[in-house]
Length: 157
Image (cartoon, rainbow, N blue to C red; front, side, top):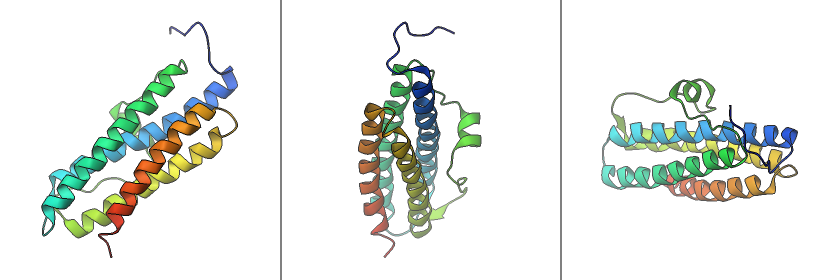
């Protein structure tokens, strides 16, 4: 394994930071995949608006996962986005298969989004004293995802 010559954080702080970031990365990758699954298999009234809304959310989630993975790499650790670890380690419940109504999809995806946000908030607390740069990154990601969650949940009323 090749390591960076100069480390930004000491080893203990780096290990804690990258572990928190990696847990969020697994969730974000899973969230994007489950979002695409929902996007492809959506049926019913309001199909088009929710279909497009899911694409917007997925784009945000994919950008966030890229930022998190690159932060892990910046800290001198290899980010892991492989399918098997994502599937076995993500904190999100498993996805659904088959065609799904708009109503069930909105609820299903809002639940997954809320779980990912909860994981981000746990990591934010963990990173507060250890790495304010990573903390700030996750605060920004959480803010964007919380807005998406709000906009998605308004359709459940």
